[in-house]
Image 1: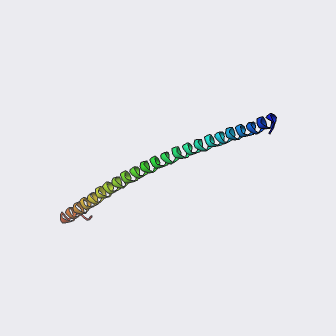
Image 2 (image 1 turned 180 degrees about the vertical axis):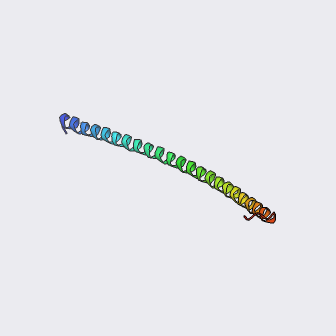
Image 3 (image 1 turned 90 degrees about the horizontal axis):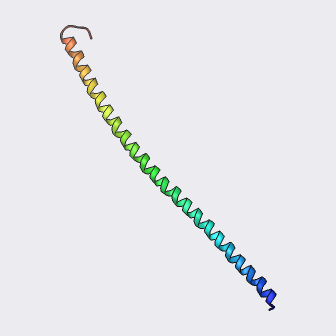
Length: 87
């Protein structure tokens, strides 16, 4: 093989290696972006789950308070009836 052909072949080899390295770098960057999205997705799920549980606790507390208030209203209504007040 002539020196010129060797240089051309070597140039193609180097160009191929550079292209492969660039492609690998793009792939690795894409993987890093996906990992970041995955991690932020996991964090979002954790935040939403915590918010869901907090809202659920708040609703249970509100329902308990409403039940207690309703019980007190029934008791007051009965007391008024006992006093002869139409209620």
